[in-house]
Image (cartoon, rainbow, N blue to C red; front, top):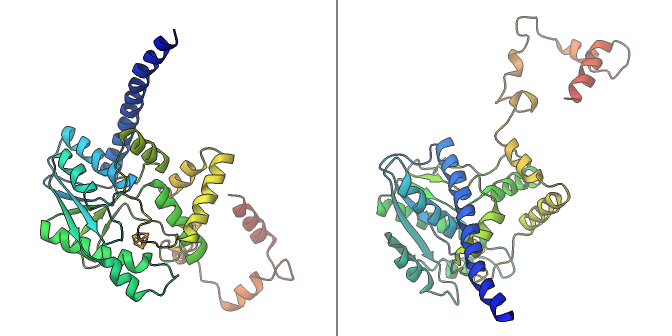
Length: 308
Ligand code: SF4
């Protein structure tokens, strides 16, 4: 009897796994297709260079794009790029043997940026900023050499939201991570097709697919403490109030400039422009808090506006 149960479990588990993997894959493809459409990320004839770091997100991105291309109504090419940054203990064979099985063109570019970063950044300091700049330079150069018209990166929904909160809390800016952007020199278009995809889904997908993950701590850099704090905070909110991350992320696509304070985004000056402008003396009187000369009507309006 025990043997029968065990055989039964052995056949059911892989089936369940395949079912779960297919269901998740379908959802991920739909989300990526929607982001591509919404932001016009890829057009006919584009050559999309997918940057593969060896982490769960970029593996997911590459496989989802390959799957979408098979059914897409337009023709586009995919080339994978992996940058070997010369980290100690880097497993050089993992990516090429994985990419060989996918049967897509790829390039593994070796640039020892690790040595440069180690030389320039004092011991104990975070190396990520310089490392990312050097990596970006290599990526742009290879994109030019390969004739890539799009550079696809594996940042997802949670990366975008975390960046938004980091900018809000630490930089004093309402700014996230663009789903599509042009490089400063105007020569490259960078896209983030995973913009609508949750990190937890990518982690599950990587597990189900058994991607050969290359550990991200080979460089020996310290983690970005502020980002870790924001990530932990979001995780805590989501546990206490499920759905908060989705709601916060959706707010990034529903901006109301008239209810913010950026005068370059909304023409506050033109409101009521037909009426004579207030003089400095009017403003001095009008801003007296409930004192002599203050307008009760004005204060009633302000209170009302605060409740919106
Ligand atoms: S974690 Fe390491 S490899 Fe990644 S950006 Fe930072 S320094 Fe570079």
